[in-house]
Amino acid sequence: MNAGIAQLQMQFRDYTISLYQQGFLDDQFTELKKLQDDGSPDFVAEVLLLFFEDCVKLIGNMARALDKSTGTVDFSQVGASVHQLKGSSSSVGAKRVKGLCVTFKEYCEAQNYEGCVRCLQQVDIEYKTLKTKLQDMFNLEKQIVQAGGVVPQVDID
Image 1 (tube, helix red, strand yellow):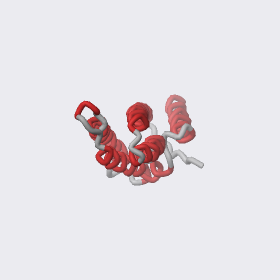
Image 2: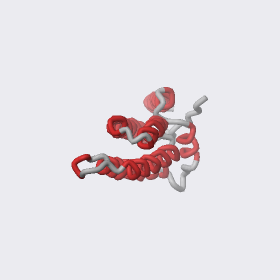
Image 3: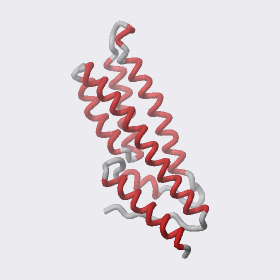
Image 4: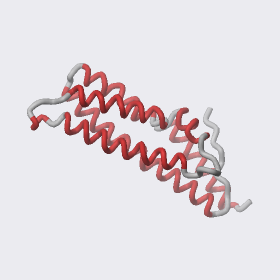
């Protein structure tokens, strides 16, 4: 095997493991990866693209519902969007985003405006960070394949 490919594969393994260790991903992401096969090699990337598009829409909805310039804050609308984001982040294994949504939902139920605004900012930062990290992971996968290698299966214990 080409030494360059072996190095890329090692880099991919280490990077993927770090995403789990740092709490960005959980076991649900592993399950999602298992659904990908030769017939649908871009399955995970496509699912995540939809997730990130959903994040943009839901964060926009939450920001509008929290906009005090409209006169009132719509905590029920914020809560509904948080609930939807929590579900979609859970289904793709976005562990940190899901965790923030739990706290965010509590602030919504308590109608704590400042807490909601802080959570909204954190969710926005967290999903963007995850998106960047996953793009880096997919780029490593692409480099391995382009070099003629096979993307390794990474076991997370």
